[in-house]
Amino acid sequence: MTTLTIQTPDDWHLHLRDGDMLVETVAATARCFHRAIVMPNLVPPVINAEALLGYQQRILAARPEGSHFEPLMTLFLTNQTSAEDITAAKAAGAVAAKMYPAGATTNSAAAVSQLEALYPVFEVMQEQGMLLLVHGEVTDHHIDIFDREKEFIDQKMVHIVKRFPNLKVVFEHITTSDAAQFVLDASDNVAATITPQHLLLNRNDLLVGGVRPHNFCLPVLKRNTHQQALRNVVKTGSPKFFLGTDSAPHAKEAKENACGCAGCYSAWSAIELYAHVFEELDALDKLEGFASHFGADFYGLQRNSGTLTLVREDWTIPSEIILPDGKPIVPFFAGETVHWKVQGSI
Ligand SMILES: NC(=O)N[C@@H](CC(=O)O)C(=O)O
Ligand SMILES: [Zn+2]
Ligand SMILES: [Zn+2]
Image (tube, rainbow, N blue to C red; front, side):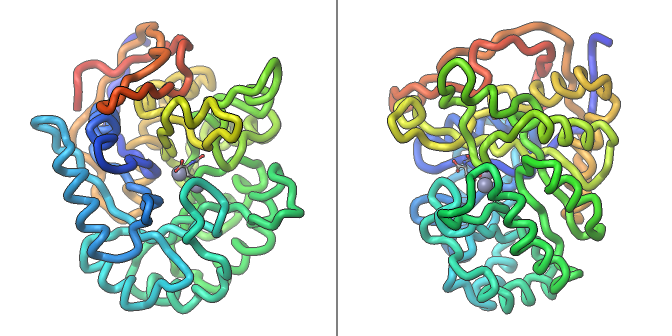
């Protein structure tokens, strides 16, 4: 096979950041995705309708000439989020609210410390048909970082989905066989996104032969059996699992640092990396469902009308990208050869 045409895909988990950075990140994603679920973990986070509308405007203003890219906005849940905040965010066009356990990841200090206290908010979300997006890791100090997702399932996720059977829940960026199994066993209202890095890599790629900060993201890469489980589940073509890059840029100096930031900037090669994985799995026929159908279906949105064509052509991901402020950023999989390339634009 030398070309592959799929219905235009969407990215169901994306960090665009803010300010000058938007010129870089919006263009990188708009190159191959029509829509993206935009994560709200800015500084300060997007905690109300007003902030959400302002952020949406800045994203739209950063679109390249002629781009029809559509940002799908989300609200950042805090201990103070009220039913009124949900109603107002929904009216402002928010499709989902994002739950980060406080301290779990980048810019999550202001997030939720007592998850159960948010149950009245989940109730309203369930009534209003707003999705709950979850960064599923506990943050207790005594829990090993490699066990944090599994602990979150046992301590929190099972109770949320039981208590709110009609709430649509996306278990974001799953990294373990436990999470994959949990989602498979759950109702049709529970789905998951999977990143390119968790399909391509395992923790050896982070730690063997030296620490590789550009492979560091949260939830952290797990052992190869978990990577294998994620690969197996996308290969089945189950509609419960769909594309969410979690592309999350940090400046090179913030990654290559004594206390390096978590996040892989994969937007530069996002759909190509997934094609690479699906080809390795001998499952290229499953890419379109994963990238272009299942997410839209789960969110209750129309599938896109256009198409995207990939050609089988080797190219090397650049070692650095220079941001508008002159700072370099290292894209995920820098220097690696990928076998598929987007042809033209969407
Ligand atoms: N995935 C990451 O490692 N980082 C994300 C936050 C997140 O998705 O948890 C970021 O915003 O940098
Ligand atoms: Zn996260
Ligand atoms: Zn993320």
